[in-house]
Length: 402
Image (tube, rainbow, N blue to C red; front, side):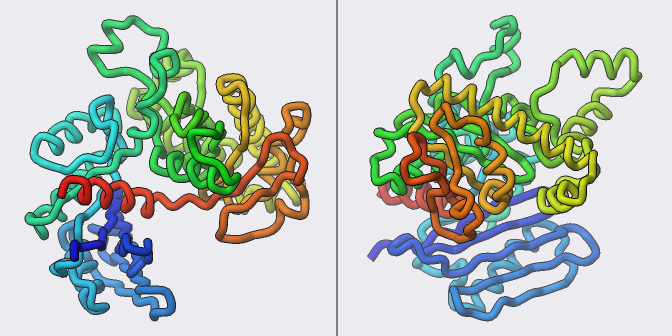
């Protein structure tokens, strides 16, 4: 019998998130997170198969190689060691795949080199992703390592959506175009929304709103992305926790010329000190809503700006698609913040959009509709599962290559 397990790794700059899945029934055999890698006190939180006792380790973990070895020890304690013949592959989340990588790809030296070449357009993410891949390859050089790219789902965008209106030669020389991100989430959620409606993905037009600390929207026509809000980098688009989203590019010139700020200072401002935290000092939507309910003016304005931008993208993507079957909210804010969902579609009744107040306040882990039964456009809450999507794509690639 062929091996059926896939280990999914999501490597951050100082973290390693992982899941081990059995693709026969998509069962999660173990999940976990290693945090504060390289710091004096690192922490691993390991959750075995449902019902098992959660284990925590607090100890110095010097680097990602040490982190993965620690993860391997925890998995081995559950009889799920990385040396198991049942392990079919390791799937890696890679944020930026540029134009070249349009589908999951078995990693070799040439693939690694191309991911490294893309570091200038994903400086916070691709280096950490590379570290995870190299560490896993060293630990299991005999096992297929598969890169699943956040940008891949968005490579179906037409050139009219993907290109910026700047000099073509300059754009091509420096690979400047809209790539989009959160692609594994948008792919998973758009298909899950179609299932919720009882239709095939190719028969459904969906606007997906991935709202977390990072946030993005996509217009999906018949299962294919035709537009998305993030661009060359994850900075463009919606208002986010610490990122500005859309901004007049001349603001950058103004800050450099008049504010005497360096490029690095402006980069830090727009990526880490803007968005909700820049507007009101908080980037946690729960805290912002608490402050709104207490009448806090700064939090109220921040929430209104957040919603205003969200409405603009809903309207824009409605126009791009022409007809819309559903809008799907996902990720931390999208799945849990009922006031955000209600405010985002409020006043859009003429577009067929509305939420049922009672349904909107119900919490749950399963995909669900929150619109009235007779709504022309369905509004859904669809919990994302990027790890399952990565595992599914990884396993399909390995199985088809055998």
